[in-house]
Length: 254
Image (tube, rainbow, N blue to C red; front, top):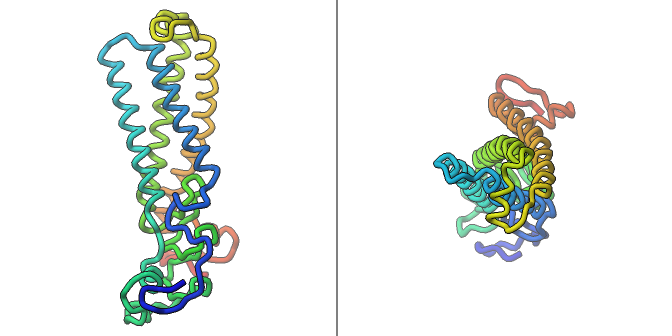
């Protein structure tokens, strides 16, 4: 690879700039499918089954719409941000000379990128680049989570949990309405036929989905909040669990 500063370096194979760089991960498509189906069922079944034209109906629609919009925005932000170590980025892709003091003073070196890196940096094999304050590689967004996008990642999983809880409550209420036959008129009015049985089945599936993903997302949020309180990354915690590092009040010792 020919660098802008004229230095020849070994070509970086399969370097991923962000979560939309190829090859894409199949879990990305599954997550988009789940988001889309949940939103479709909410608007086409939940809202229709309970709709009475009251102000509360519009509040429900507004809350879910805002949450879903936040979800889309945060997914894009977390996916698009490139969490590469800026020290590495300067050495490889910048016009700045790599022999500047703030680069040369770095004590650590990545033999794969052939660059000096910061102490908190780790090379990700999936993205094939060095990530500043590496936390983990998230296959759901096909991108690494590091210093530059970690706060957005936390915001994303919080929003996902809010959507799951909101939809779970609405699903239970819709099931009660449908089981009492109170949604029949709405379905016939909007769809021209009674789809209560189909709606009951779909809502049951979505409720199971809400419970399963809600459990794992809640667990993930609790773990990350604990890690933040201890000033640890997921990667550092994994080293501690493996016995490859020791946690102290001043940080971890490898």
